[in-house]
Image (cartoon, rainbow, N blue to C red; front, side, top):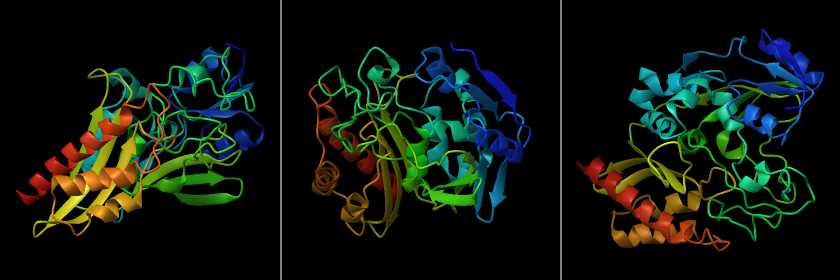
Length: 326
C-alpha cells in the first residue's frame, strides 16, 4: 500500500474543510481499504469520519433519518427499521458477512465501487479505473456483469444490496459540501457509465453524504429476494426489492428495484405501471418481465441473467400478491 496521511475529522464542518484541501473520506473502510491495498486507488490523504456526529438514527416526522456513519448491522437491527421498513433490514442482512456489516456504514455502502475483477486487476484494461484504456470485461469472463445500463465503455455491475432496497423505498440521500446542503433522490444518485465510467455517482468534489432519509412507511408487503451462487457472503446474480399493496384483489401500489442486473441500482417505472391496477396472474408477471428486459443485452457468460430475473420476478410477485390477499 502506498504511504498516505491520515486525518481524523471531529465534525462534518471539519471533514468538509479537510476534503477541500484534497484527499478522500473513509468511514468503515470495507471497500476503500481493499482498493488501496491493490493500488486501484492511491490517495495521498485520507480523512476519517469515525469521530464525526453522523452515527444516529432519528425520527423525521413519519420518516426516518439514518446517519451516514450508522453501521449496516445497527441499521438492520433498529426496531423502527425492522417494523416499518423491513425491506431495508432484509436487504442489509442478505449482504456481506456479520463482520463486514459491523464495520460498513450507510454512506460508505452507497459509494462502494464495483466488484468487477478487471477493475480490481491493475494489469487489465478498465475505463472505470483508467479512462480510455478499454473494457476487458466485454469480451472476457463477464458472468457477474450487467445486462442493463451498459455502454461501450463499461459493463460493470453495481454490487450492493442496501441501495436496492432504498431505491424501492424512495429514499433521499442527504449531502453537504462547500456550496451547502442538498438532497438527492436515490434514483438520481448513481450514474450509468456512458462515456465516463470513472464517476459512479453525482457527488461533486468535496461533497460528503451525511445521511439518508426514508419517507413514511407504506404498510405494504415488502420482500427482498437475492439469487446468488451460495447462501452467504456472495454478491447477487439477480436481486429484487419489492414493496407492494393489494386492494380488492388488484395490485394497488408497487415499487420494484433490481440488483445484479444494472450498472446502477435499477428501477423502471414502466414495469410498475404494467402491474398497478391489475389482477395478479402469470401472464401479467411475464409482461412485466418483458418490459423490464426490453433493452437488456448479455455479453456471453452473463446471458443467463435475462431468463433468471424473469423467473425471480414472477416468483416474488406471486409471493407478495398471495400474502397481500391473505
